Amino acid sequence: MFLWEPAWAASAARQLGTTGFRVSVNWAPGQTALSGADAAGLDGAVAAAGADIRIVVVVTGGAATSAPQDDAARTTFCTYARNILARYPAIDDVVVWNEPNKTAFWRPQFNPDLTSAAPAAYEALLARCFDVLHGLRPSVRVLGPALSPDGNDNPNAVSNISHSPGNFIRKLGEAYRASGRALPILDTVAHHVYGATSAERPWRAHTGQTRIAEGDWDKLMTNLHTAFDGTAQPVPGECVAYRCVSIWYLEDGFQTSIDPPKQPLYTEAENVLTIPDDAGGEPGSPPPPATSPAPDQATQIIDSVRLAACQLYVGAFLNFTFRDDTDLRGWQSGPLWADGSHKDSYWAFGQAFAEAGSGAVDCAGLKGGLPPRPDTTPPAAPPTPTASTVPGRRSVSLDWPDGAEEDLAGFEVYRGSSAGGPYTRLEAELVRASAYEDPDVQFGQTYYYVVAPVDSADNVGGRSPEVSATPSGGPTAVSLSGFVALRRGDGVLLRWRLATAFGVLGFRVLREHGGRLVRLDRAPMPASRGGGYRFVDRFPPRRAGYWLEVVRLDGSRVRYGPRRARS
Image (tube, rainbow, N blue to C red; front, side, top):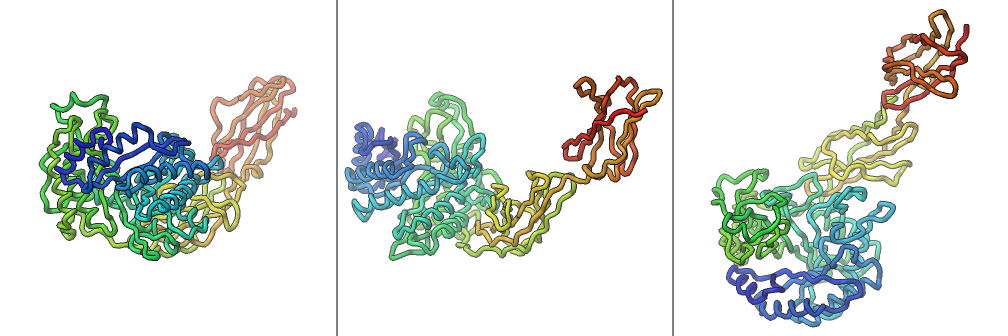
């Protein structure tokens, strides 16, 4: 909107007390300068913004498949961003790409062998742009990674193949450390802090989940510390060589339902949960539970801005958007309806921005209490787990002692196919109990397991000592005895015996004649512990052979035979 109607947008923003705008431009492979249309839009935006409205430019790709993957593409992209800053000396804030942890914006997320791809490729892009942009002028602020607050870490997902933000940040740090780089790649940490729904309270923490929303500030801090502590890249609260970084919440928003008089302005059908713009709010005391739904957008914007103002190192909060999209499949989270008129929540935006801008927020009075302090101490590693199997059951059961830490969120369980690893994490979400059942195993294969504890701030503790287990198919193959076929007056009698029926569900009897195999029983014969079994074929042809199929508890089947009838 700021690109299309800059004068009107700047005037409306000043009335509301807005001091910054986020605008996006789309880069295409090979492009090194703005298109004519984009240049005209930014020309108007910069002129309308003047000296009192800050413009943050998000330089991203028009398609996810255009994400730069090699040195040439990275240089072209960063040159494009540099030329924007060269054209507009008033712009110093540049976001490098948008939500690179989502397949909707960056592809590929994973390599063909299912290993992570996007974080390392994005790290190389950040490094190149940091050098190119700071080479233009030192005052430039390079922002990233501007991640979506959620992701599934599943390269085989049916849809939304993505990295969770914590995993992406950690792998970004791994790539940075591996590069040996002696300069930073970021001046400011940008993050998107949407909750799971528009009604979710801003201070709600997603403990044990992969989401990092506004209420998960401590998880964001922990993952940044894990990724970059001790390197040339500063983390919030820890300056390096006089360089300090802050956190900017570049996107948040609470979508509203449409008042009946405004409904003709909108098209299509709503596809998410919405809340009223202003339903009267709620009492200030007692504070509502974090799990309760918020009553309206006015309440949400006040609470979210106040929380951001009280969280350490958070320097900016940007609402997405300013004026509603007309398409209900888009975003209706602005203070203005699609026609530019004020929603009933408009006053709340102005109040929240004024409080935060003047430092008047009472942090001790926040509904969710004072925000947590940074916690970078990991929980202690658990002792060696126990691993058990049941013959005939295709699974391994793990168990380990409960952790002693009060803020323990759960455990990561890893499995390897050889002693000492490498290991693969078995679940994207944390395992909450101190036990785990691994059902994806094969008989006769040895598996090696380790367990790592995770606290509510996403600190990952040391891994437990390794434990191994080898599932077995049970004693069926060696316990069958006395399988004979005897011809008598009423047909062919089949007899067999088991030393034990442990792990055996039952039996089926089959007859072979003329090259064809026919099942003789109408239903499986159930197994009984230590028993003998009989079956009579009443109408046997000459020279028939008989097979006994043993059905195991795990569904596998083993056949014995053929046995020829004896007189």
